[in-house]
Image (cartoon, rainbow, N blue to C red; front, side, top):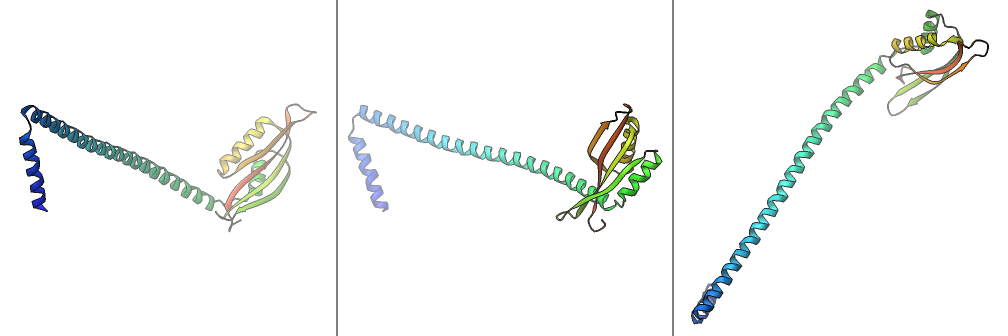
Length: 189
């Protein structure tokens, strides 16, 4: 094999020797041009590979920053969920009794208070307990005070389905109905 390559180079050398000066210069220039072109192709290929690697590194850095941001948000959300679970686990409130005692304390006469159907989320084990409340002949400032006091009493109490109707016999008074809901662990419900 080595002999064959040596023979090929010898033949090329002999052929080059038979050329005139002018032809030798043209062949040398063509060889230099081919060498420059091949070098250019190699440099371009290496440069393209470096650009692709730099782009990959930049993408990985961006993804790393995004993962770290998402991890921090996840940790915050996890802490929030744990605090919410603690708050729900500590909720021993008897909704009907607490609403009734607050209304008595604030001199608001509840016309009707009924236990509404509760829903249990099987996945989380949380029970939504609701009561429907009707209050007749209440003035707006007293109602607002009652709802604020209720919210301050227990952060897990929330008002839903609030309906207010102005009374015809006294425009300063309202007839109000709403649902108050709280959440508890289903095992304690």
